Length: 205
Image (cartoon, rainbow, N blue to C red; front, side):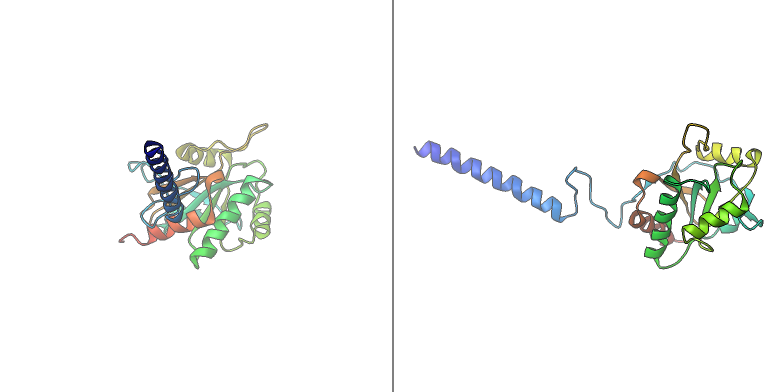
């Protein structure tokens, strides 16, 4: 009988320890799928390889003005790839970026590069920004296919096509113009993007 009691006590104690550990993990911010907690030291997005060369480009914005990537040098910059008639992933990406800027409490350069040059126009780009409440907060960059293809290739982007969707991705550049963090749109959150922008802004100049 004493043996059975000792076995029972040992099992109860072991169960209590496991339960306490589980509660401790939840309290520390771990999710129930086993992913680690978000901390100030961890990046929300995926870190990019450090040896990607810095390449500038110049395109035309929604108002017909030339815009160069180098214009944003010295500021953390958000770069994404959209098309103006998109009804799903592009509005989602735009709203996630807008939410991140709202959380930050200040704007940073946010550039959207066209992935549908045949249909993206200055008028449709302005309408997209208006619909997403991003007028003067995001710049929609346009160009012909010859101007856009090298940029798509450089960032590993598949443009919008007949019967297939473009690559939905957001990239964050540091003050030097280096690609530091990447987010697939389906993993992007305003909180995560805001966190990584702030973390890059806090780096020594």
